[in-house]
Structure formats: structure tokens, C-alpha cells
Image (cartoon, rainbow, N blue to C red; front, side):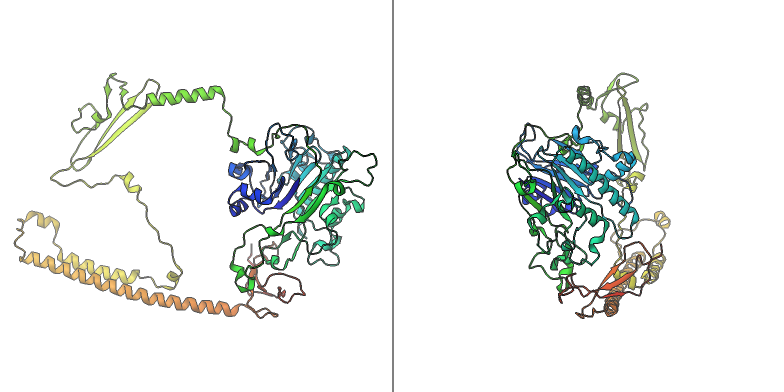
Length: 610
């Protein structure tokens, strides 16, 4: 049996990376796969994100509405099974529970019991701890599996530090309760804790004095606790065994990270011998535990950051999966998938319909089919009239049809049905007089016209507005045309000129004005084209000048004499929003001359005031 834990840093991008959820799961090749940081809300759990053939899934999503934490965190456990019903497979859980406090409405049975000692916490406190979607518990018969995503807390964020401390305090009480019942435990996931300096690339002398690192080591067996750190139990002296790397600094290139993704185990082995003092679950049933480094974003052969690789987007999570293989795990009694399974989520399964609602929908469909014809009963006379009859020009005077010259003929007839269904048939026709069609457009059609708006380019900011010059040219053309075009009312009262009299004075005057207008339009077009070309050249030169100024203002790092990259302070404080420059190379050990030289310089810009 194989168990994998993997912080996917968003389940959607990982599915897109592999092509489908099934391909992602099959690439890990495990019986139980635990994902953290799925970044999905409950209403976003659709079939393509939660269902894969041959797998049962169990999700916990964030329920908090705090700013910045909506759609944040989230965990999911996928179990590979041959059958979801009446199965004796260990991978298929007997019971599943969302959260670990017992206050969430998920799962049924023994797993919902609240751990002893939680009476000191109010229900609101327990709901807050479990409200961020950080835990899914699955009971596999021989052991209980906790899929965890531990909170992250900065050095000066007192609110999150308090939340993280309470999170692990309540969690530890739940573990103690289950261990007193004789249960075996597996705790897997991203705990956001590197327990020792061996698990951190740049550990300082006081690194291990952190309160959460001290807590982590206190629950381990060598310090009087109940848990094995399974990776360290199988690889006690391995260095640079990291599972997480900084994305912004490109630390993966030099494997400059930390080990914060863990697999912990507690409890006795499954053997039935009398003398079990030398037996434990890890030594008897754990074959191996290691890091799947092939899932790292940066791989040998990728372009280095300072040689163009910084602009190349790397696919994958900033974490690497961790796995463990178990031996001699017997089958369990037959059972079916728990009710927490994603197959029962309404967005996936759909809402169950009652017989009454089904019959009502069928009756409504038959009624619509029967009433779908255009022949309806008239409520006034009881006669049948087709819709074509109401739209003919020769409609009776009693009908709601009217016609007039140079306007539209609007014909409408209202029909009523005995079941209060009404259909209004409206016919619009156009009346033409003297061979000319009335081109008046109704207001509804005018509203359907969409005005096209062109996006401003960078060049437009360096160009002078051509409105003034165009207005002068257009005004001269308009004045010329107005001086030469005779009044329409005057022409209508004169005798029409025959077509063969093309040499008449009026016709020559019209032709002359038309030729002048054409020549003016050509001159304006040529002038505008020449001005546009000059303005484009000016904008290009101005942009090149700005680029050169910007390039000259970027400092060079001291060790490599290479242009730095700019960053902006995102952390709340006195320097929030302030820009600074750092070495462009990837973060790495100080002893490596190819790594980042830690150059730092503030830019001249001041922090934004908020």
C-alpha cells in the first residue's frame, strides 16, 4: 500500500498541467493520495475536479469569509479502489470526517466524537479552527489517516501565531484521545514546520528555538512523544532533503529550501505476538519513505534565471510530493464509501427529485406541447384565428391593426387560453409609396447598435491630437460644398432637367464642386498619413529614450556586476509599497559563487500611503 502527500498549490492548475484529474492521480501511482492547498470553494466542486474513474474523493473547503481567505487552503483525499460499494479494500475508508473538532456536519459514527479536554474551548472557537478547510480524516480500519494543511504564521503576525498555536493544541488533544482508544495514526501533509536545522537550508543558531519547532519535536518518540517522523526514521542523516522552495527567488535551481511536508506515524504494529516491546508500526510495516523530486518545477536542463530563465514560466507546485510504502496490511471487512464522498455532493450528483415533482414536470411538458400551436381560442368570440390573418394590410377595422403613409404598420392580436396562458403575436410590415421604401428605424433596433471603441496604444500618449487640423480641413470642405449645393426646396419647384443636357450651367457647377471636394479629401488623407508616420517615428524614438533611461537607473549587483531585478514590499508596515532592487540570480548557499549575492538597494520611490 502506498500513501502520498502533495501540496498542489491549486488543484485546477495541476489538473491543467497534466491534462485531467485522472492523469494527475495516475502519475502519483498511489493507493491514498492526500492533496493540500486545493484552493477550491464548496460551490466550485464540479465533477471534473473531484471525480476520476477508480477513485473516491473526500474534500474539505474553507468556510470562512475573512478577507483574503475566501477560496484559500483546502484539502482533499483520493482513494484508489476497485469498487466503492461492498469492498474489503483498505484504501477505501470505513468512515470519513471533515475537520478534526467534531463540530462540522460531515460523516457519521465514532469519528464525530469530540476529543476529551475540548470543553475549555467554545463552539465558536472550534468552528473557527475548522473553518479554513485544513483537515480531512479517513478511518481505514487498521489506522486513522489525518490529511493536514498547517497554518502559516509570520514572525510578527500575532493573530495568526495565536491561531496556529490553538490549531495544533486542539489537534494534539484529538490525537491523544484516539491513541488512548488504541487506534493507530498516520498524519500526513504540509504542516508548515521544519522541525530541525537539518530540515532548513539557511538555519540560524537559534532556528530550533521557535515554539512550533519545539512543539513538533515534543510529539516525536525520541522526545517522549508518540509519533515517528517516518522520513527521518528511514533517512536519519540525509541532508538537503527539502520539499518546498521559494517561487519568487528561484531557489529550486540550487535546492535551497526546507522540509515542511511530513508523514508521521503512531501506534502498535499489526502483529499478534505476545512480546511486542520491540515492535512498532514503522519497523514492521513501513518499507520506505522518500521525496518524489521528479515533480519539482525546475529540472536540470532548464535555462538559468540570469540567462533568460526568469521569463520562462515553470509548471508545477512549489512543493514536491512525499510518499511511504506499507507492507503486510491485511484486508478489512466489507463496507461502502462514506457519506462524505464527493460522489454525493449535489453539484456532482445532482438534486434528487420526488415522484410528485417528476409528474408535474411531465404534465407541464405535455401542456406546452399541446398549446404550442399558433391556433388559439379567442376570448371574445370563441372563433379561431391564425396569426397570419392579423398581419394582412386588409385587416378589418375592428382589429388592432392600423396603417398610414411613411410609417410602419403594426399589427398585434392577443389570444387567451383557458389555462391563463397568453401568447401575443406581433407583425411588423413596411408600406412603400412611389417606389421608395420607408427607411425609418425603430428605437429598439437603434439600441442594438454597438459602438466600437479602440484601445489606446502607448504611441497615442506621445501624439498631438489631430482633431484641430481635421476640423479645419473638414470645415473648408463643408463650406465649399454648402456654397455650391442648391437648396432642395428650390430644386423641387423647378422643371426637371433632361438627362442629355449634361452641359447645362447647373450641372457643370455640380460637377466642379464634386471634383474640388475629391481633391480636398485626397490632400487631407495624404497629409494625415504623413503626419501619422512622423508621429510614429517620434513615439518610437521617445520610447527608446525612456528604455535607455530606465536601463541606466537599474543598479548592478556587486559580485556578478549584472543588472538587478526590482521588487515591491507587499508586507504591511512602514515600507509597504516601496520598491527595491536585488540580485537577479537564484537564491542559494552563500558558499556558491553562482548563487544570489544578497545585493539589496532601495529605489528612490517612496512607499505608498494608505
